[in-house]
Length: 218
Image (cartoon, rainbow, N blue to C red):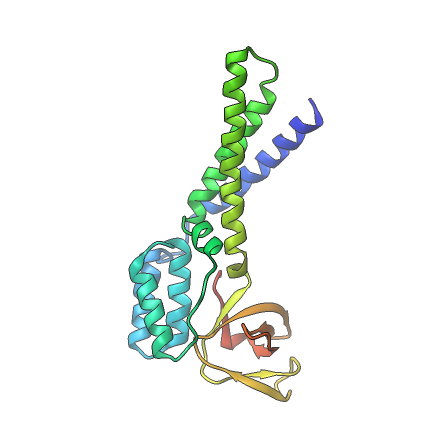
C-alpha cells in the first residue's frame, strides 16, 4: 500500500472516530429548541448573561433560526451590549449545521480516498474518477471552512454575573483593572486555580473568577 493510501486510511479512521463522538447522545434538553426556550426563560427572569449564553449555544446547533437570532440581538440591545458583527466569510461558512458538515466532510474524504485508490482505469472511468476527486475535495473544503468560521466560538465565553471584576492576577485579592457587563462575550485564553484569563473585543485582558464566565461550547 502506498504512503498516500495509508495516510487516507488513517485520516478516515480518525474522521469516523470523530463522527462517533458527534453521534453520541446529547444531554437531556440540549437541543436548539431546548436551549432557545431556556434562554427565553432567563431573559424573562432578567438574567441577560445566561440568556445570551443559551441563545449562542442554540445558534451553534441551528445557525439559520431567525427567532434565535432576533431574540439574541434583542437581549444584547436591552442589556446595552455592543452588537455582534460577522464578516461575510463567517456568515457564509457558518450558515450550516456543524454536525451536517461533519458528515459531508467524512463522505468527501471517503469519496476522495476511493477515487485515489481506484488506480488506473479507462478514459471514461478516468473522467468519473477525476470528478469524484474534485467533488470530494469540495465537500472536505466546505467542512474546513465551517471549522474555521466556528473556531473562535470554541474559545469564547459569556459573562454570566453582573459587574464582574477583571483582576491583574489570578488571586481573589488582586487589583481590579476594570469590570465586565453581564452578557458580554469574551475570549477564553487560559485557566489557573479557579480563574480564567479573558480577552475582550477591545483587546483588554485580565483574570476573572471561573464562576463568573461560561464557555459557549460546553
